[in-house]
Length: 494
Image (tube, rainbow, N blue to C red; front, side, top):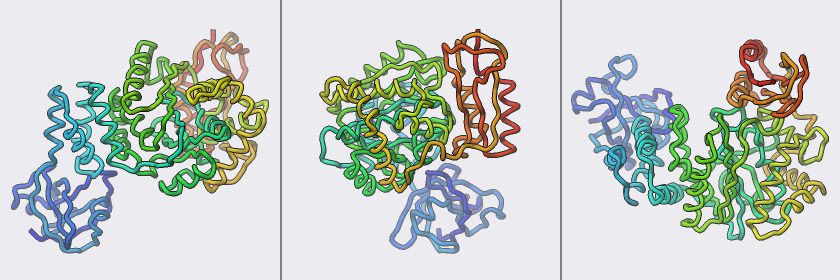
């Protein structure tokens, strides 16, 4: 069947989708979620079909195409294309097999990952794979195969250096911006640490969002390699790279479902580390009621799995179980967190000591893994000497940024202090409410929005004393977030 292209100016965010008029679809006995092949010249692409009941959207004789199809086949509006019926991806059989609780073989996992990377699965089909791995947990062997498949179907950063250091936090804790302190310390010590980081999806800031306050974070792999070879380190956004791309697509499905399958979490982290050729990897697993990992039993189980996979992939893995009961640092939101980081690196009296101590502890463990004794002392020496700050400036400039004083970082112009209603001691801080308020204030979309904490768990507080300040760049968001904050019990004081 020959049809004329109609660019409907919609992006799916991944899957390749085309829309047929219901009369054209009936002629080929096509239904929603069936596949067709679209041929334009020598190029052929298999896409998922949607059906338009109204000729207003897609008239008879036209084929509505999403932006991903336009890009893949280099189509233009009104181009003539030829379509034919296509079979469904092989991986659908394997996804059903996993839904039935069966173990997947290497070639089956490889096919699933290939189809994910090449956008052959619809969002619904990919969601079934995520759900299958959540309900029928993958074995260690399957997880290792998934990790290797994710790396295989993406680019790999090859530095030909040893050791190559990496670190990762499984997340869920507001603040906790350890990467921006650890990377310059490790790099200043002469080790290579090519750090890829994520942007926020559900938190007030991801590492990449915070680093973006200071420098660019989106680079192609070739430029990333140049930065690392020049400075020993980098802090870049993983989403701009083609490193384990299947992982990003899986995460995009997991988030709205609030599913975090253990096997996919393990494969996700290890694939990203494997793709930058890391040899020594420190994993931070915070535990707390609002964290991804709720208790020590779960944390030890996860630690054991990381270590097993690390041994199979010939990686040196160390897992730290840390306190995730409250935010780390004082700033929550990109600009406020960047200011905290610079204060730590510059040894400013206003620096958050909890963030500094955690970074020192993590650096000590990294140095120990690399065979260096007195790691804590070494990290503190690099920090106190100004070498860490100088290295951070070097990395910022290599990433097309400029040195900036912490005081010059732009914070939201609207601010509101939240005061304690009674005297006592802080016994708990609700991480989820902190994140929610900071996001309603505009973070991470507005870099200067967020929260600045004055008190942490264990601190004494007087009635009427400031607990935290909310910052916003938008008058509308500011007025709304003040009302939200009034109705939320963020701090428990006794």
